Amino acid sequence: MGCNPVRVSSGNHQQNETTSIIKVPNVKVANAWPHWRGDCRRQMELFNSETVGGIPRLLEESSELDSDPQIIPHGTKPNRALHQTVFVNRNLTLESIKCFGFDMDYTLAMYKSPDFESMGFELIRDRLVSVGYPHELVRYKYDPSFPTRGLVFDTNYGNLLKVDSNGNVLLCSHGFNFLPREAIKDYYPNEFIQRGDIDRFYTLNTLFNLSETYLYACLVGFFTRAKRYTNQLTGFQHGDLFMSFRTIFHDVRDAMDHIHETGILKERTLKNLDKFVIKDPRIPILLSRIREVAKVFLATNSDYGYTEVGSQKPQKNWRSFFDLIVVDTRKPLFFAEGTLLRQVNTDNGMLHIGTYTGDLQHGSVYSGGSSDIIIDLLDMKGEDILYVGDHIFGDILKSKKRQGWKTFLVVPELIDELKVWKDKRDLFEELKHLDIYLAELYKHLDSGSTERPDISFIQTRVKVVTHKMDSSYRQMGSLLRSGCRQTLFANQLMRYADLYSSSCMNLLHYPFSYLFMAPPVLVSAPSLAALFGSSSSFSTLIDSHDQYKSTQCIDGFFQMPHECLVKPQGDSPAVQIALTNYIRKSCSDKVRPTQSPSSGSWVPVGLLMCEKDSEFTMNP
Image (cartoon, rainbow, N blue to C red; front, side):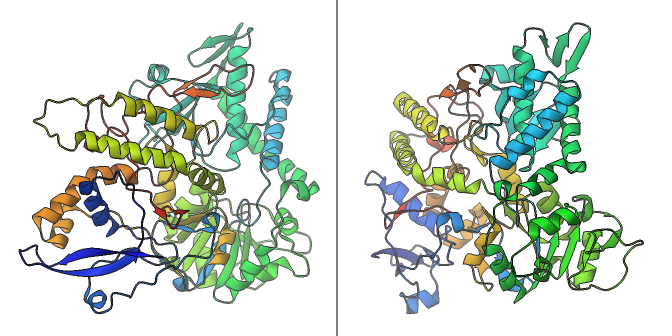
């Protein structure tokens, strides 16, 4: 791979400044890139490291580099595919981890989608029909293209909401009818909800919630269209009976609890493991390799019987892979006060009488307990443990906040998210060039300028391009993005998960001495001033600051909100045809056609993406 020399100034910028040359990999930049933006791009690369593989793209000037400019290896690429990558939010050295903990459902035991979710949907639906809901509901079948994780159900108005971490509404559907912005304001005048009002707003964060999410849409859609019901703001009237959205919510939650507590969901799963559970031959390999360097424990909410059957591995007792096994943990209670720790009789699955107070016995199985008890039994500290799970609240948030465990979130949806990112590279490239063109129109203007460039063509084209990108996701859009904003799920992922990936099996692609390094973020203005020591260099950074911040909010997952959609035909989800408000106030307070790009009125993507040896790359 060829290299371009990049000059980095040493000391203050004086007339006879000294410079050193660092050889860096070739990065193809569009010919239309303005000179001033090119300078900004070079400056920003000083802070933007390619951490997958641990090889920095650009290094700050140092005495070592002055003496040996060939210190950076060239052409080094990780031998793992993008979908095998473990992404990083906070630096973590695997070598410092003394104990690995795993959840079972959707972590070690991966379920086949959409078959498993479809079964869950049918069980909940049939339960509702059995307690008095209209029999017509049985004609609804699960559609995996509609729901996504992290949605919020409004129990007052029956809306499914996609929100950001502050509660700003990014997307809203009533049944299968996606609401335009004007209709959203009828429900939420400020396009904002109080996320802290947990009695009203219920977050559907887990993979088990996908079938439940789709059922809410089915029920609201059914009662809205049924002529015998009269639509009200908070529910439906039928003669002297009123069915509120809150009642529907509680009935669905009760049905959901019923299929789990009675064991009917697990019973159906065990009867047809080949249909519902993925048999991954890599699981014994991963667990065996981990046990060579650290302790391993399993902490699952499932009971012993289900865990025993679901975890069986040929030619080896599954319990031998773990130093400690805890079932019936009742997470997230497990990470708080917990429950009594009892020992399980592995011959019949019954619990021994009394609380277990002895030492850890290898191969034994325990029920209940708490994270504090686990730490004592394993003789570990919180910082020594890396816990791997799929539940952003039950597994990741609570273990991080209450115990200080290192956390690894399993996000199977990343495979589809990354596929869109890779397949739609031409659309991202077009957005980058539109960004460049927009910058050219404004680069000679300041607050004293009266000229008003016509950017209507750019706005129209951005609308078209973002619509094409929207169409690549599910009906509810990307799990991580809506417009230039992160979703609530993405924010929680970044806040509480140290690592995340599409599968815990991706740990196989990394040595246990690996240092996971998070991408550096832009440092504060005073720090930059001290670093560069020159008003000219510092001002160049400041010029690019707004654009860089706007770019960070994309972070590789660009998804504009679904604003205007076709009214549903029958019971199918609406099909998106246009975006009436492709520039959201998420990037500015009030967007006007004459705003400059530095105000953040639309989302530039030019600083985010580059072509490197014809490989499309992104920041993990």
